Image (cartoon, rainbow, N blue to C red; front, side, top):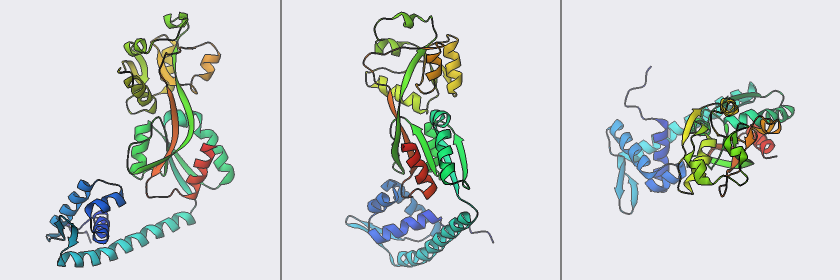
Length: 300
């Protein structure tokens, strides 16, 4: 039979148990990796749905009302049943084979993940691995939503309380132009202000490449100017080859083009375009064995 519309959700009941145990909305918030206002809103919504006052909030902390104690007792049974359900379904997955959902940013997916997966296959030949490719912000969204078990991103650490990370490698961005571009005739590095004044061929907002460039220029008081915004590294490289403007890409992506003379790298004065590759996963959830193996391979 369908649940009534006023049935509470599991996360709210789980939060209620933490509030009851810790006696504080703030402590419960820290345990679950969310803000105190978010806990307060969930508790208010829970009380609204049930039509009773569960918590009594005072300057010294938060206590249960009489009806609230009963709700907590019932909630404990519900959460224990939900935990048994999750554990049981995990066991069923283990019986039908090991599965790993990986999300990776474009540069990492194109140049690093294939080799990592070859090594992982040697260790776990029966594993089922699904790889999704998107920009770094979308990778973090997938991990945070529980749609990916493990993510690989570029650029600065994710500023999200629900995500943990580990550095697995280093990279740098390259400013590249077609042969014959005026910048190729320079005998000294390009001033950073000249780079900032130039309309560039770039990845879209949300990509790790774009974020590193934006933060590097912001440290000097400048903003990025885009001529073209493209979601594909190969499209950006193609535009640079055709002389559509200076482009900013991973040095990994243009290694062959630089060696073959199809593109020329331009040095920039006083700006660091180094960046970090990171593995990310959901805070509070220890990565499964297969994910830990892939992280170890990536960290090399």
